[in-house]
Image (cartoon, rainbow, N blue to C red; front, side, top):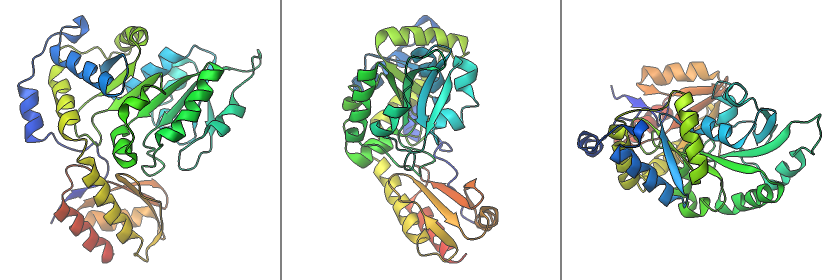
Length: 337
């Protein structure tokens, strides 16, 4: 029986080319700043997005939490959509790590606007937390891979600038968004004070994310990373995978998007499916008539792994380890449930 893992794009294995790059990496002690490959990845990532500097971390959760720590003070408040990963899936780290409260907005599939944000910025009053940061997510996980365009981001960036707020991007699947919209990565550096770039999701690296910002922020971020336990030594073996991913796995994201569209189209024809959210990138969210647990069991019996995100909602995530013949197999299974 064919096995198809659609649980997440974090389940990928390094490709042969990536493994070779890792094996041949030049390494040193990164805490001393002496790992050549780490330095190369940080500089490369910063240059792609038009930022001054970067810092490599084990996970996107760490880069996001470091960013929040850098851009806020205790008793501050950040603004984000109610589906935001930094709020829902980072273990309460906003409060625990930074002593910051969160103002949640109800955007459309996780997408918020300047018009929604402005009235939620607190006036200077001792009764209110100080609003200091806005966090966007691109693409939006809970939104089914929905994504901002640069034209949607610009008004938010302008508002933050005028109000003296910092703007951070949780770029968990930022390259999926860029491939979908056709926007230029360098334009993001003109809008955001900080950007988290995940390498271990759609790009297929085994470990790691990079936090990008100006040099002074990254200097402070290194101190925070050390306190968080994220200072690694010969981490260049991991950075080499990230460099390879940036060089070889960005344009191929279009394949994942095409595969996701095929599955979304097929799901739309299935009588046991109540609704399919609009598909934009590599994530497909759909609602089931029967409880999701029943459908997941039927899929599992046919070798298809997936996750539920609600009682009647299932998520498929396409990635570089899902090949065309596997997509065809999934389609055949969906037709016969």
